[in-house]
Amino acid sequence: MAIRNIAIIAHVDHGKTTLVDHMLRQAGTFRENQQVAERVMDSNPLERERGITILAKNLSVRWADTKINIVDTPGHSDFGGEVERILRMVDGVVVLVDAAEGPMPQTRFVTRKALELGLQPVVIINKIDRGDADPHRVHDEVLELFMELEADDHQLDCPFLYAVGREGVAMYEAEDERKDLTPLFDTVVKTIPPPTGDAQGPFQMLVSTIDYSPYLGRLAIGRIERGVARVGEPVILLEHGHEGDAPGMARARISKLFSFEGLERREVESASAGDVVAVAGLPNVDIGSTICDPEHPEALLGIAVEEPTVSVDMMVNMSPFAGREGKYVTSRQLRDRLMKELESNVALRVEDTDSPDTMTVSGRGELHLGILMETMRREGYEFAVSRPRVILKKGLNGELLEPYEEVTVDVPEGLMGPVIEKFGQRRGEMIEMKNPGGGLVRLVYRVPARGLFGYRSEFLTDTRGEGILHHRFLEYGPYVGPMNTRNRGVLVSMVDGESVAFALGNLQERSTFFIAPGLPVYEGMIVGENSRQGDMEVNVAKGKKLTNMRASGSDDNVLLEPPRVMTLEDAMGYIADDELIEVTPKALRLRKRLLNASDRKKASRASA
Ligand SMILES: Nc1nc2c(ncn2[C@@H]2O[C@H](COP(=O)(O)OP(=O)(O)OP(=O)(O)O)[C@@H](O)[C@H]2O)c(=O)[nH]1
Ligand SMILES: [Mg+2]
Image (cartoon, rainbow, N blue to C red; front, side, top):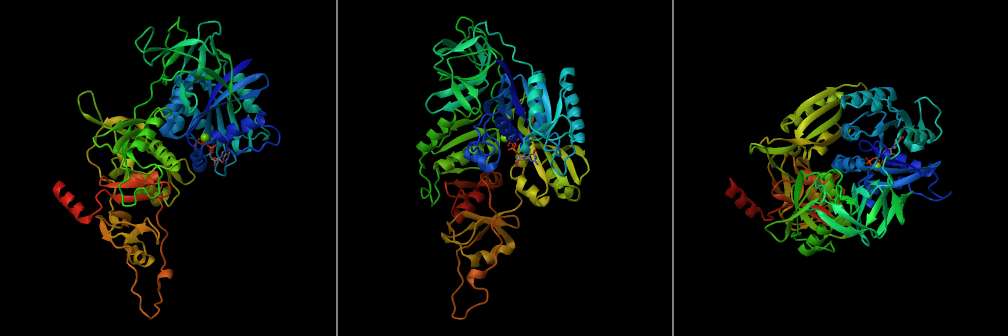
């Protein structure tokens, strides 16, 4: 049977999963009348809640006599490394570009990686139904990008299609009648080359991703490069970077083999070169390893997992409310859960610290770490989290290096002032400024990653919610020294009790609250933001003295601004070194590390 292997790649939100959804439907994967959720691929609860893809997923569709293996990839930049590895199991890519936004930082990153590997692209200008769509401009921008990335002639000649993924239609020209996805399927089959592997040779396969099953353990996923994989056959595993009969060699046996049919993994007895499969029975398998015939230990060059750039400390929750809301709260439970995560979350690192109650967890960015913590919360874990810190490195001459990000912002023309000023404070360096018309100016900056912590919410305020901000890891560069990114203090509760509307109302002119009335608070808990520098201790539990005269502003009709609600990632970007986030299944609370005000004074005197 003919096979095509493709990955769908794009910047976050440009419509990959929605398109794959319609590919599945139109290729007859589902029974007639079968009820299928929208974006069925985004199956885990956090993906559904946030509307983003977190884990790449393998699937396949049949078009006429061809099996098309598809990988739906995540678009968020924290997962760029995974996309890069996935490209090793496909022979072509569908590059999706939003017809209004055009190529974005992540488009550039994934397209560069695909072109460098010599993969054949098919470009889809998607969402041409948008009111602000400009498919012809975006077509030119994509071509420019291809030239800048030094695409070869064959790649430059690639087909361009136009689509409204959400309606399941793709067209050869933007103006064509909108019917179905036939132009896409036909183009993939015609232009993406079939895999080249020789089914006659000895078995060889590169592990491009790892999945984890509670019953089978680690599953190695990749394209069979050569030969045939068979259940029960012995294989050897060559570690990444080792070639030939090297020390990193382990013997194992294929215990189960799966191919991808529609959305399912189907157990098979054997699979041949060119097909994408999941292999069970190799407990220590890692990404970038080669699985091969024991008689022919020949390693393929894999891509190592990228190093983490951000760390946080996760620790046992010691707040006065500890243990009230979580099911798993001990250091042992926390540690076991984090260790288990390492089975499948390959870009994560977990280290012990001097304190048995604290573990350092490192990852690719705030989203990568935030998603792990959100998942744990849902499972019933309760813990505390420190401010994230970037991972510093030493350069060749011993100089200190820190991670830099490339940031792209689209800002309404009239609101550029504060944005440019803030990037200045955060040591950003403008690389590009473009005004494509339409009222939004695009600025591109190079900024130390530290400078971005907590910036998103300020950015949204400064651009009245109309700005768009994307960033991705760029490189390590010179350390720029201490940087202060929060220029306002916080309001700290000085009592244990319950917040009262009257007290909040009295304070709200000088502050923004993070809590609503009627919530339990404790001494040392952070309840809001001061409008000036410096922390302020407040009593939010103080009720109004009752008199027998009915005052006009009685407690239940104090007009309160709605509190500022932070996500876990917002909170990580917000807190300072002397603060923590208390994470429980029910709540996120911010607190001072030292709960008692005089302890804090002593500590700050000691460090001054
Ligand atoms: N106007 C318009 N919106 C679309 C179209 N296709 C998808 N969308 C919307 O774009 C948003 C993102 O769609 P997804 O399919 O989740 O995008 P994605 O590329 O998979 O996103 P990530 O996996 O997070 O990178 C959703 O709100 C979709 O409804 C389209 O053709 N036109
Ligand atoms: Mg998606």
